[in-house]
Image 1 (cartoon, helix red, strand yellow):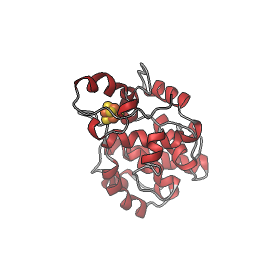
Image 2: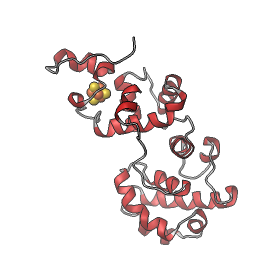
Image 3: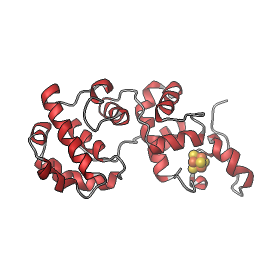
Amino acid sequence: MDYFQQHNPEAETELLYDSPYQLLVSVILSAQCTDKRVNLTTPAIFEKYPDAESLSAASFEELFPLIKSISYPNNKTKHLLGMAKMLVNDFNGEVPMTVEELVKLPGVGRKTANVITSVIDEQPNMAVDTHVFRVSARIGLTVNAKTPLATEKQLIQFIPVVLIHKAHHWIILHGRYICVARNPKCAQCGLRPACKYYQKKILPHSIIEPINPMLPE
Ligand code: SF4
C-alpha cells in the first residue's frame, strides 16, 4: 500500500462518468469489455438518456443500436432497461448507496455494487475483478482464495479501512499495465521485494539486481 500511495496516489476508475447513474451504466457495460470500449459507447447513451427516468422509457429496439458494438449487447440492453425501471419504481430514480440494495438491480452483482459504493461514496468495499483476483494471489496478498468473495474477504481483513476504496484501483491498474496475466513485467515493477511470485519464481533465475526490501520489519 505504501508503494502504491507513493507512486499512484490519485488512482481512480478509467471509466468516464458524471453521476452515479452514469457510473452504474458504465460498470454494467464493462463486464467482459474494456473500459476504453465502454467510454467510446457511453457518450451517445448519456446524450439520449441522461438519467434513469429517460432510460426507463426506452425500448429494447431504441437502446440496442447504441450498445451493439460491445460484448453481450442483448443481455446488457435488457439489464440497463431493467435497472433503469427499478431505479424509477423503487428508488425514486436515484442510485442507492448500499451493496444490499444495489445487488437487487438487474445486471448488478456484488462486484458492481462494490465498485459503485467505493467509487461514489468511498465505502470500504473491495470489488474483485479478474485483475484483483489474479494479482492479489500472485503477490501473496491472498492465500488459497478460490473465489472472488474469498479474495474480497482476505483483502479487506488486512488493508487499512481508509485505503480500501483506493486499493481496488491500485490493484486493478497494476494488473492491467504491469502485472499482466501472461508474462508480468517484473523488471518494471517496484513491488518485487514484496511479491511472493517474484521472490519464489523469478528471482532465483533472474539477472535483475535485487532491490532493497521496502516492507516494514
Ligand atoms: S514483481 Fe512481477 S509478479 Fe510480482 S507484482 Fe510485480 S509484476 Fe507482478
